[in-house]
Image (cartoon, rainbow, N blue to C red; front, side, top):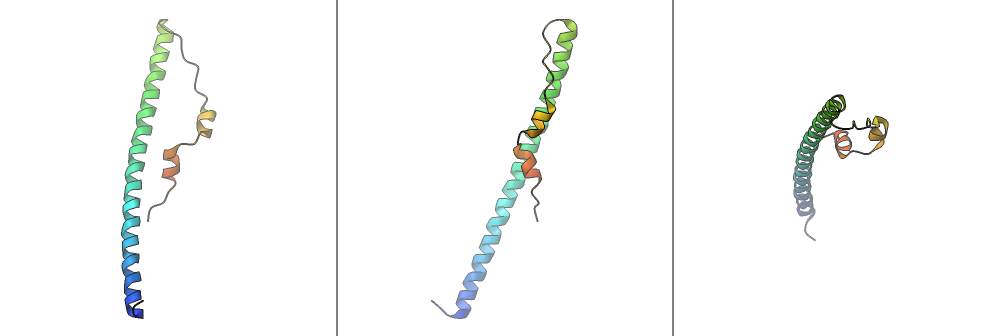
Length: 90
């Protein structure tokens, strides 16, 4: 099994490797969070653009306006970005 000192050294090495791996995972999660946030912003911008377009069509009579989106229902739906945003990175 090795001496006590060798086992301690092996544990310290394994601990350092685990910490390095955990930091790499955290870095990846931060990158994913950034992408998700950007996608959410893009989606919101598209939604806003559609709302303006729908409003213009209803005024101009070139189309039927879409019913307003139920914000309460949207808030009840889980969103990956919101879950990631709650994570705290140390």
